[in-house]
Length: 147
Image (cartoon, rainbow, N blue to C red; front, side, top):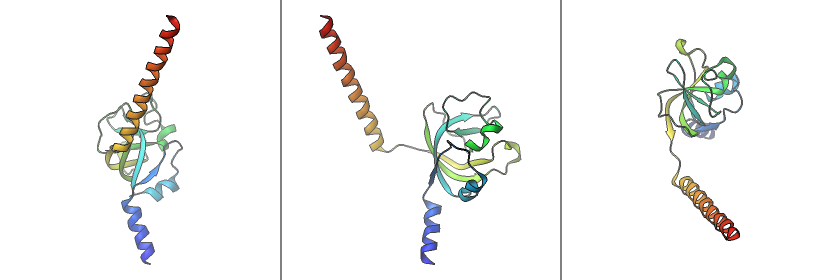
């Protein structure tokens, strides 16, 4: 009994991570319903003003909220700052019961962007610096051959 209680508490406090690469089935959605989740994707604003999280970059406006992609896109509330890069959004996954947003079956309530850790930022900077150093070395080699 204690183990079941512990697992329930853990499930409700640790965000479940999942991907939007594949449509979310109703069975999966019911498992996630009302649980904290963490999803990585791209934020878009629907023509009716709703904000959507999808896994594809550079979606055209006709694809945002389309019925064929509805089970791979999440309605996000409240709206978050727009970003051209992929973001990790945390919040509470819910089955959408709003009548005015029928084309979005799932939503993330209390959404917020999870900021990357300092370790991740350090790794990004290291890769950038190594890339710049490599580029300088290549340019030097080319200039040496030319002269």
